[in-house]
Amino acid sequence: MVLLSGNFNREFKRLSVYAEKSEKFLIWLEPLKLCSEPDWNPQWEEWHCYFDPLMIPLSDFKRLSFHYFNKIYPTRDAFDGTPNESFDFCFDNWIGESDWRIITSAVRGDLPIFSDQEREFYETFLDWVTEALKFTNIIVAEGNL
Image (cartoon, rainbow, N blue to C red; front, side, top):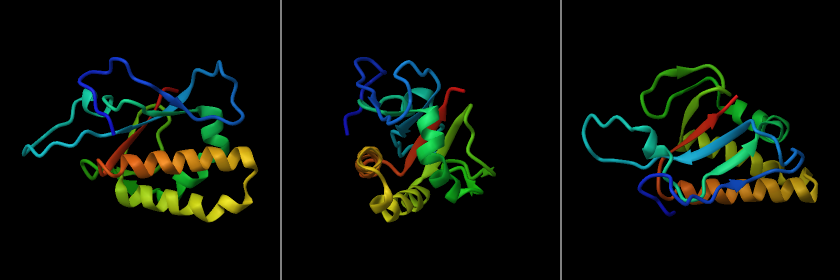
């Protein structure tokens, strides 16, 4: 995992099957850069510093991924423990490693039923999440709706 100081020269990984290339509403997956300081309050730059964050057009997210994310709700914010009843398409969702394991396990279980294109989408998603979780225990899913 390559972390940058600032968000310069980032390579965004767009993961899509059905969405138009021009679609502007996206869900971004950004690993949180962890810090061991006591009373640490992460700043925006600390979850916008990964070299290749994953972005999924909203239409593909809703069609292909949303029901997997729904498996973790209601849950708690992975950073501050605030209860979260549902995924927020307009804001950041701080999802912890145990919730990511639930999501990825459910996706893996369904891999045999997908078309080739969908399977490639999910395998890329699984690889990306697995790699990110080697370096953090929180991935922020942020919508721009």
